[in-house]
Length: 250
Image 1 (tube, one colour):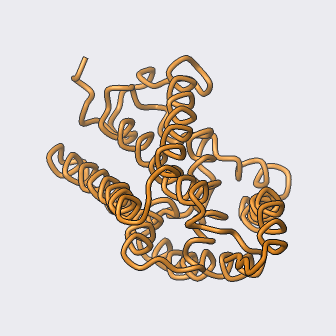
Image 2: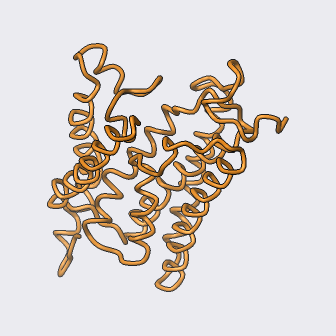
Image 3: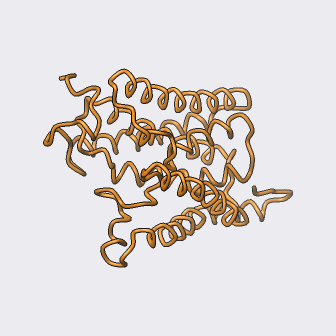
């Protein structure tokens, strides 16, 4: 059962993976929903010191998850530059750690508006479906994306992240600011971090490549839709906070 534990998408034999929206995939999605409900409810009932400890714990688990991935790659002799933590979600691991240490309004809004939907999209359209459930990379990929979504979800549910429309453009600017140097790294290494070079199999960006000639059209289009949706969901709470005496939405 564990014979493919150290395999990656580069080494796995065909036919060992799982089907999109098949039983295994749906089980992971159900686990995510249950974990989100439980984590948000638990965080909301914590207070100052308890919340700080939980933020640190969630950030530490994400860092340990990334370290687990790197250790398995090195042990199996599978490490290649492709596995540098330069995808959007990988970078968000370190931004969550930064936020846990030094919370800020901009970073909180970014993790809400960009971090949540990118992690959820990765869970819905996993690029690692060629791998069996027992592969370390499958376990890492599902659990790390769940963790990336849980952190901002819990903090938003607890009111520690309060989405505000004035951080919409700065959040987009932060994402673009990370993408620009990653683009040149892609060119230098011949890699595809942030899917800036091509859309991998199953990636929603592939539709734009097929119908608009270049998958990159999908990044600004989906980005605008994603940000608009996330702030539309937060709009009622923000309006309510504005009407409260001495309320201050952040």
